[in-house]
Length: 362
Image 1 (tube, rainbow, N blue to C red):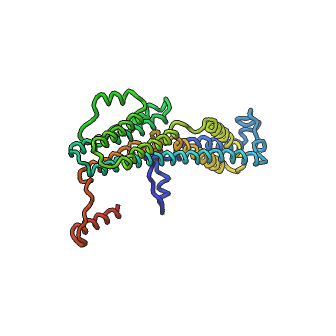
Image 2 (spheres, rainbow, N blue to C red; image 1 turned 135 degrees about the vertical axis):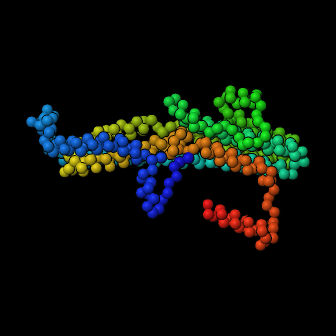
Image 3 (cartoon, rainbow, N blue to C red; image 1 turned 120 degrees about the vertical axis):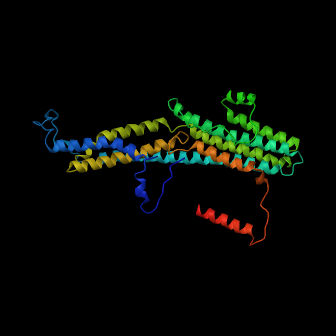
């Protein structure tokens, strides 16, 4: 999952030294050579080493020749680069938040399917063994459906070079620890197709229709059809997330940003050293200018692909584990019995108040 950080007081100072998920250190490695070159160039010009008769006299550079008298062209160029990079970062953040919203919408819809169908079995006249078997099969299939969806999102985001690293960070395709499993033919069918989400979704819908016919789901069909509709809503959210995973940020825009960043990187030490009086100022200004732009570019690069492994991207394994833990709560027999009413002031009330107090402390 994305990196958690603290705010308030002196905590922002502590965040500066956090390495996990930080782009500062990556940008620092890029900006440092540029700043050093700017400082060294300023020193050489100040010592006259680049003029005729100096150590590098064949270059015949003087301080007057290096001076950019009109700073408007450089200011306009830097502003253009900054605008393009900031716009790309904003679009990358929009892609990231949309992908996260789609994943949680998909998860909420499919979890509500299991929740509603479990409730629909309350007044079934079928044998308890049949009802329990339906619940176990439903939990396995819903958990498998969610895992296959996250698996496909991660694989769709990866390029051929990234595929090997992605496979090691894919969510495990398993379900809560309930009795029973899938038979060998089901496993072979699932592994033989790439359209696993569609296949498992169909299995869930067939299971619901069979339960309605057998009487395990003792609810009128118009009400029960709501569960099938929610499965479709979850599939819609999945395809919305798949759109983000399969359609990358436009290559021409990315290529243009990279070209302008490199041009800015090469020109910065030459231009800035002519505006300052010391090598120290030349070093500092070059460092700040280059580092700020490259930080934004690295942020955009991390956020543009939210389903790939990385500290600034969605943790698909954690999302799957959270989903399975919620399903595991539903499968417990005690979950089918709503809390009963007790007298105020009793031991049960005291324990409830203690529990609520512990929740406030968490």
